[in-house]
Amino acid sequence: MKLRYSPTSPYVRKVCVVASEHGLDDRIERIPTDTRDPKSDLPSINPLGKVPALILDNGEVLFDSPVICEYLDSLHGGAPLIPATGPARWTALRQQALADGILDAAILRMIETTRRPEELRWPRWIELQHGKIMRALDALETEAAALDDAVTLGQIAVGCALGYIDLRFPADNWRVGRPGLAKWLEGFAKRPSMAASAPP
Image (cartoon, rainbow, N blue to C red; front, side, top):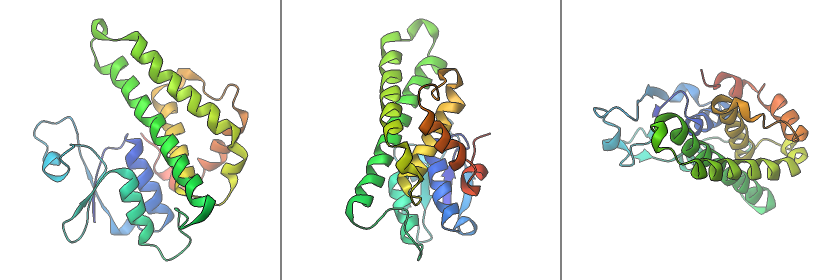
């Protein structure tokens, strides 16, 4: 398999953590890809021009990260990261959706504040994205103790989202007022899969 990736993409990181947790690293060739390069062949692989994109051995391409993670989870014979049934399944998927929502808002905020010319930036838009992130973090704080249960895709997604906030918005000091979530990340970030995939 071949993974088109960017080293700072939190969605890519989620896929890499899942691959590592399942011992699949040696089955995946990683191909660095600049999504902003007009000469990139990425749009011919993923029409959305986004990473991650996973090219299977039969040539089929999977995107985006939830689909790729579910596929990788299906290749492992041990305990799944996405529980098959019951409340644990819906908790894991909900946590992933919440974490991906944090990332969606964070990336929109990052683009608005760093890539758009200053005179064209929309402060209200930036504030709206920041508010989404903070509300989601508050929600995660209320269930931080439960994040210590058996590892799932939901926890991986949350860990990657928090790592991205640290990378792009360190001045947010999101840990203030969220001691449970901060403590959980401190431990979770030490997992070999998380440490190995930390962005540069």
